[in-house]
Structure formats: C-alpha cells, structure tokens
Length: 98
Image (tube, rainbow, N blue to C red; front, side, top):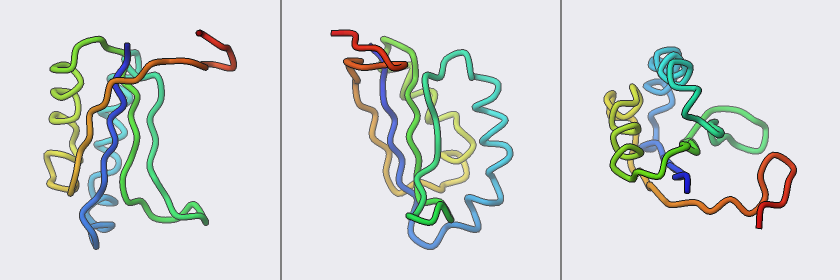
C-alpha cells in the first residue's frame, strides 16, 4: 500500500523554493520508478508554490520517511510541515481497484 507525502512550505519561502526547484526535480527524476505521482500545490491561477504531494510506491513507512528527508527541499529547510500517510488505491489509472 503506497504512501502519500504532503508537504507545506514555510510562509514567505517562495524564493527558497525557486532556488532549490531544479535539484528537487532532479531528485524526483532519479527516483521516478518509485513515484506513482508527484507535483506542487499552487494557487488557483497555477502560480507560485506552497507545498506538494508525492505518492510513493512503497509498503515501508521508513522508506517513505527517508525519501522525503533526503529531498533537497527538506534539506534546504523549506517545509513547515510534512505528513506521511498510508494510502489505499480504490481508483487508479482510470480503473476501479476495489
């Protein structure tokens, strides 16, 4: 059962996010085989960024926690909060699974 990782940026840290964005994306690219989905949270206009969602394909909570701790955004001190939550797939890739 995968894990959803939800992050929230510290207020007023868009510049820090932008400074580390490319290395963060490189980290996700290197680990894309482990990702079911990943993306940033934005305002209604699709601007800025204030957090993100990663769905990691692992049954191991420690692996999910290590994954986000090794993320360049985490290491840069961007996040005010991180949630690591078990996720049951009911519908996935346009298919009902349960």
